[in-house]
Image (cartoon, rainbow, N blue to C red; front, side, top):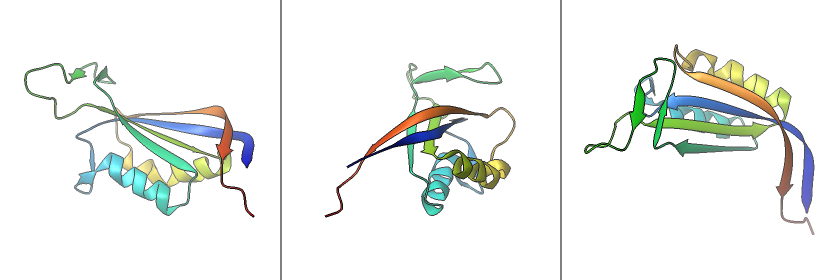
Length: 113
């Protein structure tokens, strides 16, 4: 069975060392997305990047960086993404970037028989 429709993709750009109440921010955001029943989320660890402070974060050093870039991608309907943003807003601090764009969702699911 194939389910199709319009939705939003939320992308949150953070650093690996970003925390929320002592826990990794990316893990907290993922758990909150799951708890709220959003359609899907993925955390991607980057190998190199820079953000608001223009400092390059890279794994290409003798000792691996402890602050590699992390991208959290979350997909769902626009209304649900907007509600989720309200929930995570206190977690997002200066220097972090959040973007949202339109997507066409095609979901393959088991047929109900």
